[in-house]
Length: 88
Length: 189
Image (cartoon, rainbow over all chains, first blue to last red; front, side):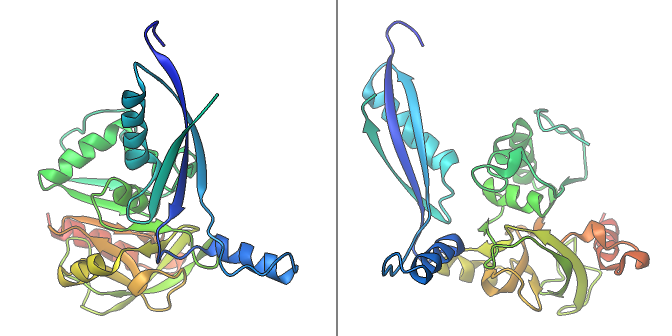
């Protein structure tokens, strides 16, 4: 990190696209219903990432986060992502 | 053997990405290995028409680099499956399957947790039309769409498969179907 850089924090959520089987979500749903914890129609299991970026400005940080999401954190064949900035 | 941190390939006729595990298979199977320094060279090799085989984790790496279409996701039963599997040769016009008759049943073991092949509707039709489906499971063990066990690239020079042909090369091991595949490679060079 250099003097003219700032820290930006982001949360990234990755979830399976519609139509992709989610056996983990299905197993969790069954456990919820068998144990009478609630009447849950559907469970999807995803991933949460926290990224701490050091960038000149917010625009640059967002650009990097988007590249990271598309290039590494998700496989566009099966997953989609959303991200949002969070305070420290 | 070429180390993953290398950045160039020596002069080779064929690149084989073997099975196993890579980088703990964190994120998704093969996702981090797909970003290894050597993979840029493998991608270049593909682009100039090189022959590549990806087995199991190697297949996952090839889909993660987008050299092959689709993705490998966890088996529907959420279990690691390790057993001999009957496969149908759906395309025998590739360098890896040319020693088999079309639709022949062969036996090759699988050993994976994330072997369910997935591809979206329109793209799976395109794969079928391009004769990209090379091997199919006779008795689908993992939920793969269209029973797919192995696919090839449009130019038919890159093959990815979840079963392990290198584990079926001796009668003592139960099958020589894998040996026939490697013999196919030799007869095509």
